[in-house]
Image (cartoon, rainbow, N blue to C red; front, side, top):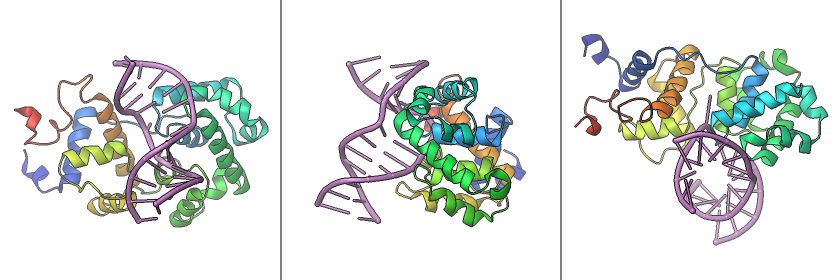
Length: 220
DNA sequence: ACCCAGGGTCATA
DNA sequence: TATGACCATGGG
């Protein structure tokens, strides 16, 4: 390994290895900010492929807007997002979110908010927890917030870089203090972690930590 | 048939 | 504050 890489802390080193291996991810998938926000709610504990179908249904029904989601019944909405799982819960969550979103004046108004206030307000919506809020803050409002998900936790635990029993906010604080506060960096990093988790033992002939850790047990 | 997926809420102790 | 039950589809 080059001398340059050796100077980086582990959190930077893993980032560069992932980026070298998988390349630029161009996240979040979605054509509009609103679509990204809907996707963030629909993908809660759910495979993305199931979310894509739900979003396509909403598009085909001309319902992928806050106004339309508020206009149709919760049953109708649940039917459209059926493939995303938890459809009754998520239909209510989408309505809760759209109600909040419209009341706050939509994207242009929300974009003016300071990050702390915006995060608190997002978390006040029933159905939006820390990870969903941070997806929206990072990928829609382009704030330097590091998203912690189950993959991040698992990977860095296996790499021996974090303790097992840290809470969401504690982990976020660690990542945000180990890395410079940079929206593009956090955007790419989270996307790389998710991509890595999906492909490490399926399409790639390596175990999860092989390409990231010089002492990976899977390397024999 | 089983396991997991880009979580979050609510009831209970 | 800390667990556990619950939500539910679709692919491996």
